[in-house]
Structure formats: C-alpha cells, structure tokens
Length: 330
Image (cartoon, rainbow, N blue to C red; front, side, top):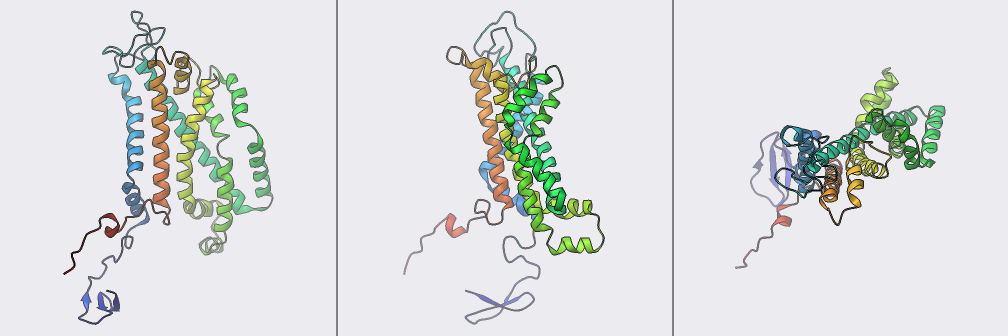
C-alpha cells in the first residue's frame, strides 16, 4: 500500500481510507536523520568479519605490548638449562637453540611488525595526500613536477632499493627503516588522490571558498581532503597489510629488522630451517603473521563496505530476505 503526503506528518493511502498520522521528525527510512559518522559506524558494525578482524588486531597488539608484564621470560633473556625445548608451562611456546623463550620473542616480533605496518601506513597516506592534493589542485608546473617524481619512483624497484639501503642503517634506530618503507609506499595513492582532487576543485563549494578569499592551504585542508577521507582510510588498511608482508620479506632475507631486535620475519627465517623437527620455532610466528594480515584485510573490506553507499556488504537486508515466512492460504 502506498501513501500520499498531504501535509506535515499526514499521509493518505492511495487506495482511499482515513489519513494516517506520522509524527513529525520521524525518519521514514533507515538513513534519514543520521549523521554520516554514525551511519558509517552502524554499517561497519553489521559486518561480522570486519568486527572479528578489528577485535583480533586489537587483541594481538594489546597482548604483544603487555606481554612483558605477565610473561615469565623477556625476549632477550636466555635459559641455559633449556635448549630447543618444546612448549611447556615454563616456556609457553618452547625455546630456541640458545635458550631464548619463543613466546617472548614472538610477542616482541609481533609488536615490532604491527608497529612498523601502522607507522608506514600513516606516513604513506600523509605523503600521498599532500602530493596528490597539491598536484590536482594547483595543476601546471606543480602537477608536472610532482607527477614526474611519482613516475620516477614507480619505475624504481623499491624492494631492491630498500634491500641496498637498509644495511647502511644497521646500528641505527628502526624508525629510519620505517621512514624508508614509507617513502616507497605512497605513489599509487597519490595518483588516485590527484584525479579526485581535479574533480573536486570544480565543485561549487570549492569555487565558493576561492571567491571568499580562502587560502589554498585552507581549501585543501578543509574542503578537498575531507571529501577524500573514505579512500584514504581504506588505503591505510591496505598499506598496513602490504607493509607487514614487505617487512617480513625484507627481514627474512636479512634486510629489515636487525639483531638483537626481532620481528616476525626474523623469527620465520630462523625457524624455517627446522620447521619439521622443531615446528614451534616456525609455526607460532608464521601463524600470527597470517592472522594479523587477515585481520587487517577484513577491517579494510568492512571499511570499504561502510564508506561506500553503493556497497551491498554494509546495508541491512530487508526482513523478507532474512526470513521468509510461509503464509497459509484459506
């Protein structure tokens, strides 16, 4: 049955009958009267895989950070009475060839890998947003110069360059390694943001801000970047997962995190040679790597569905689709 609006809060059925009073201000659909932030949050919370991924990632990071408070051994301590011992009450994940506690080492490696991934994602999106928005907004020689830099970095083999430069960083802070990863993780995103900025700069609200004399930096910060926030958030999650795998690969080949510090990559490298005879040296680090990357990917998929109004993944299904009721015919 359809209704016809005859006044504020009054609807008349199309087939006749008495008017139906609807309270003024009552939302007539799911999204009316809801702010965008609350709507995105509601759509995200409906995605069970995204929630599982978020809870898993938070739990992994919290346990890795707090493990020194409850773990019986530190990651740089040695038990000279237990070499290559399997998991036991005193060593939850077993011990290594030189008596290191594998649980403490794995938690330290997980913390380092997740931290590197998160920091690299933040650094890359900051650089990509500045370069992409500036190139798309100003155009001209600014656009040509920045895009020439992007094209140059895209054709360079980033893995080999990082592998060549990282040995020179041995003995220095691991933050320099994070900066090196971040410098090679933003180019494709910058190109996408440039194209979106070129479209947004022709919109009426941007032209109005120009007409009112707003500086270019203010227009980019308050009008351009907020309208690209959805893509930027999704890109951060993708970059975090890709960076964790990249750091693991570099550390596996000896070009990433350097001893005496550890990461999941160094632990997988040290335990891969004895994965069959002493599997606890390899399985815990490898399993946590898979779980962490899957959790980040689930979060990214959930954010994509929540931020994209055309996505079916974050929309509530009609009741008729969720549960079909059989109606008996008289």
